Each structure stands twice: as structure tokens, then as C-alpha cells.
Length: 483
Picture (spheres, rainbow, N blue to C red):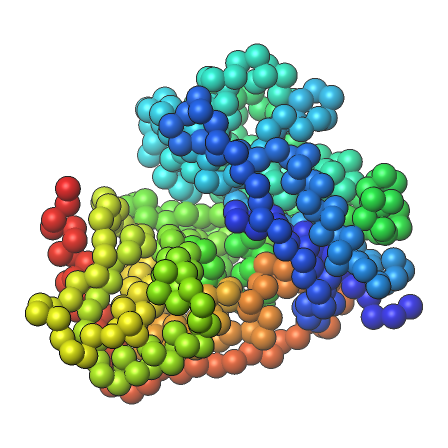
């Protein structure tokens, strides 16, 4: 037998990807497609997907990735997905509807909770329509007949496990996002279910990441081109698996720089914040939790900015212009809607602050610098909030995710935090690499994981802190001029 491989299915908010990976975390091939959403006119802010259509996409991506690969080389398939998203199944086990994390059909029903502080105590997060229970409530209120037929609620990654193996379960890191799960006790909560009027019977048995759900169903194996004997390994939430790819120790902090940027600390006990600034989640590693703040939309802002100002140019071009802007010094500041933990009200309007009349030093690169600095400062502010809840004594911070493609963002984060930033070689596809960590546990191959990383250390001087204060002042200007 040749070098063994794993197949990892990762269902994100924007894209679904399938990757072929080695036990070292090395990614051999990736195939990607956009997740297709539809809007529901019965709600002001609702979006959903058709599970059967998504499954057909997954099967096609699997076949694409497995081209020229012998079925004997693949030992296991695992899954991951966006957090907070769910799929509802009826009594026959058929898909009814898929609701992603960006579905807010429950927003108009948020007031059903009278004791939100109690919900925070149990769930480790302030309850909003982002979380799965409110999606179920919203569906129930507008589709009572269909709702009466619901037999199971599963996370999107657990739904993929079900389609692969026929086994229904709910993995702990995903259960953390439902508002129906007691995070400290790591069990479903009848008390929380009662708050939402949701019967506990629709909640599947809890399962652990790295548990074997079974082997591939015969029909599934035939459709994707693998043997029925291939193991289906329970994965988990995309953020937790991305964190796993860095192979951190307890008390380490990890930045996951993607569409949003979770800032998480690995802890061995349940911790909450009296000011309710943090989330506490079960980890995909048994016995551990992750304490989280989140900078919100960061990488997505950079992508959209590039599409407007650099539509036909590369990120390298943008980076070169940012370097020139750094030499000249910032000529403008940006506040583009990222989130700061503990902020009572989010920024509703943002943009660029620049001196008038316009300086002759103002260039496209200056705007690019302002966007990247806004991202770095937002992440740093969330890091500080996390440290105010639980101190961070280590001299380094782990970081992963596609946002770390920017060498300057790495340096900005090091300079602001005063910490060494460590980035593993497989940082770009961190969630998929985390899938390799999960599968390695099953086969006793943990030692095979590539442990190499790049280190970025803070530059001397206090220029970063000076720029940080100027950024804060400019951001506050937008808050002072709320509509």
C-alpha cells in the first residue's frame, strides 16, 4: 500500500471544499465550489440551502479530488463545517432544509428569552439569532406543518457524516453553537430546550470528534469511488479544527484569520466573562474548551477592497504598495465594521478618515495600508479583551488561516501584541489540516504531523502603539457621529 490518505469535506459559509490530505497535513489536491443559497421571503433576513443540492456538489468534488487516486490509498473520510449552521431532518430521515450561520430567520423572535444572563451562564455566549436554536424557532413559527415533521436537528458537518455513514450524532464543538447545550457539563440541557420550546427528542446523541461513526454506505461509496470499508471519522466545527492544525498546548492563544477572525485560548476549564464579551466552546479535543472573542468581518473586507481597487492585480501588487505607504507613514485611517469585544454598540457606519486638503502623499497604497491596519488593530483589541478575562503569559501566539498570506499582517500583529507570531506551514487550509489531526488519532499516526512553523518577531520601537492610538481615535470619530 502507498502513503495513506484522508478525504476531508469542509462546508464553509461561502464555499464547500474537498481535500485529499496526508497524515503529515500536506494537502495533495483541493476542489472547491460555491455554496448555493436561496432567500426566504417570509422573513426579513433569511437565507437557506437545499441539502440535496449541496450533497450533489460534495459528491462531484469528491470524484474530482479522487481522480487518479487508488481507492486503496484512502483510509478515512472526515467532515467539518461552519458553526451555527444546521440541517433539519424529518421522521423518514430525509432532508427538510439547510440553514447556514448567516440565516437570521429567528431575529424577530429573540425577545422570547426573558433571562438572557442565565442562558449566557449555561451556554457561554450571549444569545442572538446567529445561533441554531433561534433558526429552529423561526422555522417553527412560519412553517408549523413542516416543523411538526422534524425528527432530527444536526450541524452541517454532522449532516455530512450522516450522508456518508447513515449514523446520526451531534459533535460537541458544534453543539456549543446551538444554545441548547450546557457547555460546562457538556450535555444537552432540558432547561435550555424549555426556554425555546424545543423538544429534546430532536437532538441526536452527542459524539466526540475523532470517533468512528462507521464505514461508508454502499451507495455513497459507489457514487464517490471509494470502498465501503473506508472509515467515516467524526470531525467538528471549522474553527476548532483550524485551531487543532496549529497543535497548540493548553493556555496557548490562536488567531484564525479567515472571513472573520476568532481569537481563541485553549483552556482546561469552563470560563465565562461577567461582561459577556467572550464565547466558551467545547473543543474538538476531549476535556478542553476554547475561550473566544471574534473580530468579525476581517478577511472578507480585504477581499472586497481588493475587488474594487485591484480588480486585475495580485495581492503581491497590493503588498508592494503597502510597503511604500509604510515608509511614507500613514496618511489615512480606516474603520470598516470589524467587531471589538465589549463594545456596547457595533459600528454602523465606517470608512476612511483622511486630512484635508488631500495630501500629495495620499496613494492607493495608503488606503490599502489603512484597511490592513484596521484588520490588525481589530484583532489586537479582541486579543486584549481575551487577556482581560484570562491572562496570556506565553511569549508567542499561534496563527492560521488564509489571512496570514499577508506577511505584513503577521508583522503588524507581532508589533501590536509584542509577541512572537507562529505560523505552521499548512496555515492556508487550516481546517482541512485539522481534519488530518483528527484522523491521525484513529490510526495512531500523530507523530506523522509536520510540526514546522515560521516565526515573526516584534520589531523594536513603539511606532505600532502610536499608530494604534491614532486608529482608535479615528474609529471613535465614526462612533461619535452615529446616524
